[in-house]
Image (tube, rainbow, N blue to C red; front, side):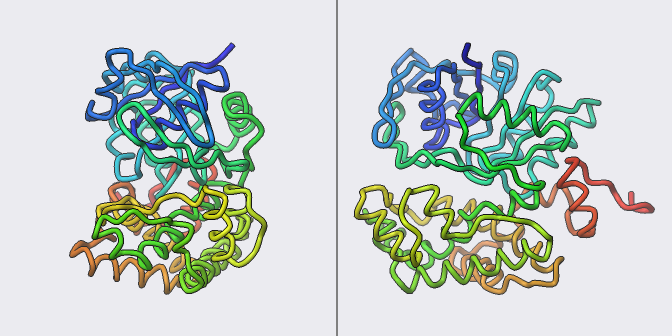
Length: 366
């Protein structure tokens, strides 16, 4: 019998994930915090997926966070990272011990923020962090999504750590044998390649984004952009190695996500383009490639680089370059890290939180 699954979000990833759940025999519900994302579905219209997944369903639609929690066993956060804190604040009062929460995809120690909200209520639930989304796609309208790919492997971990086996079984019930367990939230944070990859792609194609052009993303990962992505990956891998963590390489990421042979990153993207799953790049500068991935992805990697003594100089440069381009201080925009006051903790504190989901305030600090 299928599970009831509530998705917080109504964009490309939420739509695509809902369709994937439906195909697997589960019963998805969508919640748009603003209400706008599900407006076309409220009257019972069908949600249609095309591309790597062809299906149609009439999803349940929630009118509030309370409804989403009340009517579902599993709750998945499937919206950009800059919406995570707001959604966690809205959901936390309504979650119960029977719930399983999945963050798709996890960034900026968000699982710790949610775990601490629940701990304040005397509650602990398994919170699973995915290193990336289960699929990629582009929302075409209020009732349609183009699914570019369904990933064959997704890194995950669960806090508290003792709930890991139970949560992995739940994920496999929902989506099949697609998951690679990793050692804690720091490994998952460093397994999310979107920030580094989107940084290189956006830097290399910013004028296309500003002009609203229609352009192939895979085709425009040219050799120069590909080399930048490879060097960014080396910085991330050095931080993971310093922490004693095993994470996939950028080569494995493209191979497992887009089913192309391992080669130079530009060559892999050209192959994706030739196969028709290279994707379409952002047609606006107001893209999550920058507004989400810089403050909620690059900023945490840069912070971990400083803490481990392996400065991520290209990541640091990207934060500053994009801040200059956009006239914004992206480092100051991360609501989750600001709420956690991450600068007050040591690397040992973070490693403890990566396993149990709770940051212990150092003695003498109030």
